[in-house]
Length: 365
Ligand SMILES: *Cc1c(COP(=O)(O)O)cnc(C)c1O
Image 1 (tube, rainbow, N blue to C red):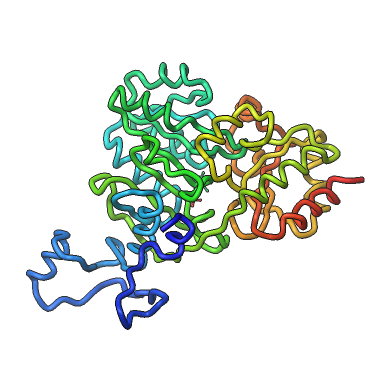
Image 2 (image 1 turned 135 degrees about the vertical axis):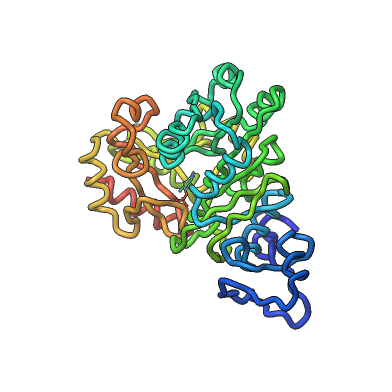
């Protein structure tokens, strides 16, 4: 099956007379009539569930579906993307060690490193992942590499093949957050990643109506940490995002557009190599007039709404300075290229023409 078909069918094997749509198994605990039977399930020798915090049929289906889409042996679904990242980091690096991560890491992961991992002994070495020499230098003596296929909000692409090679030479595991790309556009395990995580709150969920995460990798790496049932859905508009980026470059008040495959983009070649089917629905735009221009845009947009999250079926716009990157200092933000006039757009699946028209009327006089 091609990825699009797998996205519909992965994770759920339907036997004859089974419901076409998987029923929700809504129970915290299961009945057993034999101690031996319980013991065998608890040891993982025979399939089954005994307590919902450990495992649940629906949660297992979601994890299996994402694992299948990513080409992984196994997966675990968690209560959020951050939970997936935390679980995956401790699976790959159980003891405190230096972690190499990109400067423009997702704000939540940044805060996890700074506020939770550093106080217990991990250290974080942040480098510009576009500079592979800097990555090679930072990797010496480290215990783990963490990166994102496409970063938030400036949609920079990590050269996963080169990073995987550098890490493999030193026996380091690589954890890749593939939230922005989804396995439809990129499967990091095929490019050298050890584990992949998703905020399923985003494209994997796709309807802005749930919070969930998934981590996939080898059977040993993946641990059961599932808490909540979620349904799998997909949405993706790479072509719409590309069309939107081209239109916005010409719009008044716009001084720059970030999109990996945009002609002239510094990462165009890498993007076309690593993401041959498109670079996803996320883009960033720099507005000349700073925060006031952003507020004016928000006031004037009709269909498109301001929302602090991303990757739903509806197009949304966010402002990293007040949302995802609010915990960075203005200097740290400026160093990353995030300015008061930077907005991130998450292209939904509406008609591309409607999205473009809404932005052009809002940016006009
Ligand atoms: C949203 C997001 C997360 C965190 O996911 P939650 O489901 O909010 O915990 C992690 N990484 C990226 C790239 C994200 O966009």
